[in-house]
Length: 69
Image: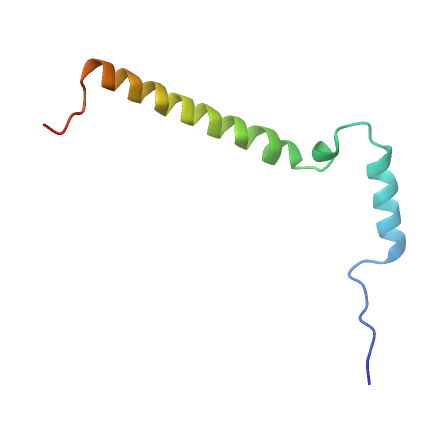
């Protein structure tokens, strides 16, 4: 006996969502509700933090701050 598994969402809902997303004139990776956070804000925050840490390291090295002995 093999039973077919029911889909998570009805096909009509999926088609409705698909038509909505295809009608938007944005980039594909910015169509969702929280996509701007994951694909824009987080990488910018990581890049800013790493640039700050690199700059602080170069400053400390050039001034001899933080040496062990």
